[in-house]
Amino acid sequence: MWKSFVDRWALVTGASSGIGAEFARQLAARGLHLVLVARRREPMQELAAELHSRHATRCEIISCDLSAAGSAAEVMAAVREKKIEVDLLVNNAGFGIVGEVEQADPARIQELIRLNVASTTELIYGLLPAMLERRFGGIINVSSLSAFQPVAYMGVYAASKAYVLHLSEALACEVADRGIIVQALCPGVTRTEFFEIAGATGWLQKHASLSPEQVVKKSLKKFGRKNWVVVPGWRNRLLTLLVRFGSRRRVVRESTRFFRPRRKKEK
Ligand SMILES: NC(=O)c1ccc[n+]([C@@H]2O[C@H](COP(=O)([O-])OP(=O)(O)OC[C@H]3O[C@@H](n4cnc5c(N)ncnc54)[C@H](OP(=O)(O)O)[C@@H]3O)[C@@H](O)[C@H]2O)c1
Image (cartoon, rainbow, N blue to C red; front, side, top):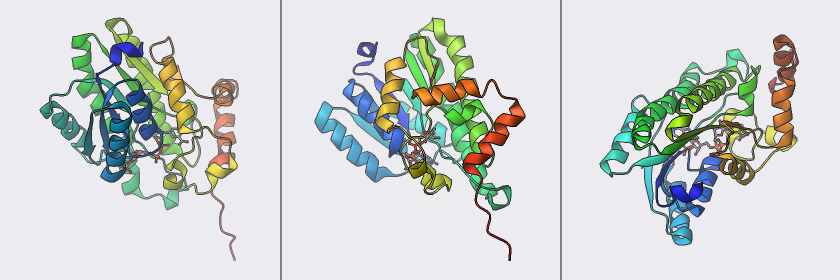
């Protein structure tokens, strides 16, 4: 399967750390060239140098805030200018917010929606038509285990990932017989900077987790098979089944056990 992608270009968002950087590594090892997109340029430059020396990978770096209006269009214009045809889109950039409603920063919530939902959608609808014309290509959208049920105290994030999951499955079905592969990757807890940034400090240390290497390995192994949705880890797959048996109310109530912030004791 991956042989047909050798010397073709993948665009990976959120390539400066975590799962995105790991996608870049494992795709480079399969012979793809890379457009790396995120805000922090330096880690992407280091990654590009590493991949060039290891695999002779050609890397283009685009430093961009994908939560800014018009940014996805700017990325696609930059790619066109470099005369690069993107055959694989990895929509990975994203962040979460954990906390109570009163503590939420409305501007940060807007950022999350623009990054996790709007830019993700713009990149898909901007790049997919050319893939369809070539009758070749693929999209991996990074969703989450939290997409399978509402999650209390993490509601906006979980809803954004449910959007990504539903859109991916709908598109996978639409384009499956036109030479295009679409996968929704739904990782559970993964050892990255995600929880620190989400405001759930210390959470990662308390829960079983997978490494970004394991998550990406599973995604790429399943890519092109019949799996439109990939959930790495058997415990995580079991959870996606269990939530189907409980009442919706019960399932959301269970989720409060995970992310309810500790309230300060009133004097
Ligand atoms: N870790 C988990 O447990 C877990 C579980 C399920 C799903 N996920 C999903 O996996 C994806 C990758 O997250 P991760 O776990 O690898 O966390 P991470 O290490 O924090 O990586 C997030 C990436 O997104 C980029 N990013 C964040 N805001 C951006 C913006 N405004 N514009 C452009 N790029 C931006 C970051 O780069 P810059 O800061 O340089 O911009 C970084 O490269 C996310 O979509 C996340 O929701 C993670």
